[in-house]
Length: 81
Image 1 (cartoon, rainbow, N blue to C red):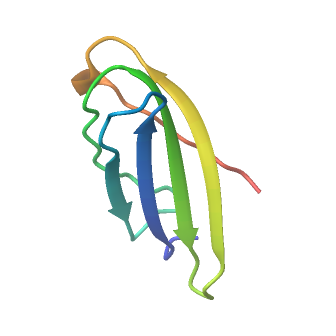
Image 2: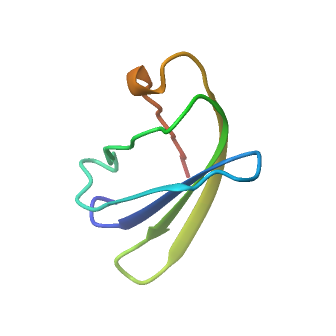
């Protein structure tokens, strides 16, 4: 889908950190690019919630580890049907 609305939330796996949030619309062949500023390296859980044009909501969770300088990190989350 190219016309879904995405809500993205990333939480560190340990308590005390503020979540990082972002949103996206206007995909291209089902691919959405979302600028995201990681606040630090470590273990994260990303939750992506997609609201489709018909109102259907889909959600997927991705555990990831950011290592090195978080400013240089690109993450690709892929979910295929």
